[in-house]
Image (cartoon, rainbow, N blue to C red):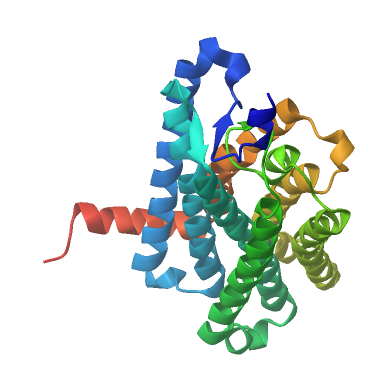
Length: 313
C-alpha cells in the first residue's frame, strides 16, 4: 500500500458513467447522434454565413466564431467520451488530461468573453445605430475576438498550471467523463490555499466580469428600447437581443453552478449530469437558438440551398 501511495500518477481512469454500465451502449448511440447533429448544424451555420454576403455583418461574424468555438469544444471532449463508453479501459494519460483541461478551459473562457462582445455589438446596434458600421468595423470585431481569445488563453494556462503543479500520489480514479477542474483537484496530493484561491478568482474573473459587461449593455439597451414609441419597433429591437439573452442565461447558469460553488458542495454525480448538458446539449442548442429565431438567416440558408442545388454556370 505504501508503494502505491508513493507512486506518481501517470494516467487517470474515468468513472463518469460507471454507475450506468448497463446503459453505456444506449448512451453511446444517443450522444453520437447528438454530436453528429451538432457538427452538421454548426457546419451549416458557418458555411451559410461565409457564402451569403447579406450575412457579412458583425452579428453574424460573432455567430460564426461562436459556432467554431462550440464545434472545437465538443471535439475536445465528446469523441474521447464516446470511445470510453465502449471501452473496457477508460483511461487518459497525465499529459493528455492536462491538454484536455487547457483546451476546454481556453474555449470555455473565450466563449464567456465572446458573449460580452456580442452584448456590446447589440448595444451599439440599438443605442447608436447611425454610427454602427463605423464603431463595429471589421477591425473592431477582429480585435474583440482576439481579446476574448487572449483572455481565455491566459486564464486557461494559469489555471491548468496550478491544477497540475502538485504531485498526484494517491488515487487516479477520476469521477467524471473528462478532465474538469474539481474532479482533478480532488486527486491532488496537496494544494495550497493560495493556489485554490487563485483558481477560484480566475473563475470569478472569467464569469462575473463578462456578465457585468453584458448587464451594463442590456441596461442601456432596455433604456433605449423603452424610448421607442412604436410597439412594433420595441418588439423588433428586443427580438434581436432575445437569442443572445437565452444563450447567456444557459452558459452562465451552468458555468456558475459548476465553478463558483464552495468546494464542500461538490457532488461528482450531480456535476457529471450538469456537464453533459453544457458539453453536449448547449453546443447544439446555442447556434440553433440564434439561427432558427432569425428570419434573415433562414432566408440566407434557403438561398444557399438553392445555389447548391442549382448552381449557376
